[in-house]
Length: 376
Image (cartoon, rainbow, N blue to C red; front, side, top):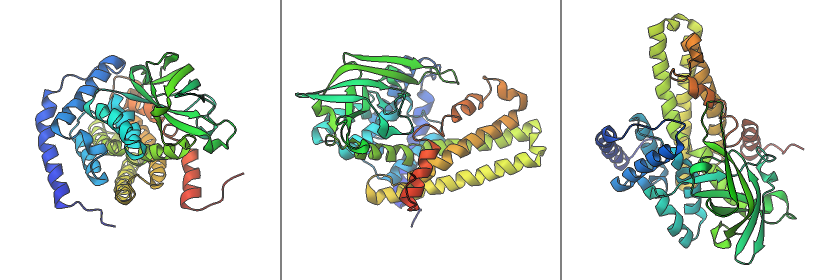
C-alpha cells in the first residue's frame, strides 16, 4: 500500500501552509473555556474563514488523503480546532453526505460548512451508554411527524447547538439493532430541555437532553425507518476513523514540549522517564502510520473501515499515558490547574469512554477483524 503523497497533494499542502501563515495572525483572542456562547461564535467565525478561503469542504468533497493533510497542517500551525463544529463537521455532516437524500444534503451541509449552524450528538442514554443498541428513547409515528420522548446524556455541545443527530427507537418490537432510526432534531423544538453537565476539568461541553413529546418531521430521518443502526455505524466509523487525526499531531507536539521541559527542570536525568517518552514517541509515530493506512482504505470505501476501532482503542490509552508522563515531568506542579497539560490530563480520562468504550472497541476488533465468536 502506497502511503506517500502525490505532487497534487503536496501542492495542496503548500498552498494551505501559505494561507495559514497569513490568516492566523489576524485571529481574535480565544474565549475562556467556560464561555460557550463566545466559543461558539469564535469557532463559527473560524469556519467561515475556511469557507471563504475554499477550505471548508475538505471534510466531505476532498479525498481522505487531502483531508488528512488539512488536519495535519492546521494542527501543526496551531490553528483553531473545530470546537463547537465538531459534531457537524466530523460526524453528522459526513453521515448526511454519505446517507442523506439530495434535499437533506442541500438543507444541512451548506450551513455547517459556512459556519451558520452547530450540531450536537444525541446517542448515549443514562441506561444505554456502552450498549448503545439498548437505547429507549421512543419515536412514535404520527402522520408526517415522529413524536419523540426520552432522554440523552453526554450530548456534546447541546447548549449551543441548532441541530442534534438523534438516535431513537421507532419499532420497540423489533430486535434491538433493527428498530432504531437516525433523526435530525431541531434543538429549538417545543419539548426539548437542555441541562449542562460540568466535567472534572470544570468545563460544560456536555449536557443532558430531555425530550417530552417532541415533534420531528419524518423528512428529517436520514436513511430508512428502522435502518438507523447501519447509519449509526457510518457515523461512528467517521468518529473513530478520522475525527482524531488532528489530535495525534497535537500529541506529538506535546511530546516534544514535554522533552524540552524535562531537560529544563532536570527530570530528563531520570532514565525511566526517558524510556517512557521514547516509547510514546514510537507509539504516536505508529498511530500516525495507522491513520494513513485507515485513510488509504477509506479512499476506496468512501467511509473509514473497522480499522478505526483499532486506532481509537490504542490512541485513547496512549493519550492517557502521555499526560501521565506530563504529570511526572511537572512533579508537584501537576496539581496546578493553571499549568500546561494539567487540564488535558483530566480530560484524557474520558477518552477510553467517549466515542465507544475501550471494552466495546476490543469486542469490535475481536469479532469483526479477528473473526472471534461473540461472547454469550
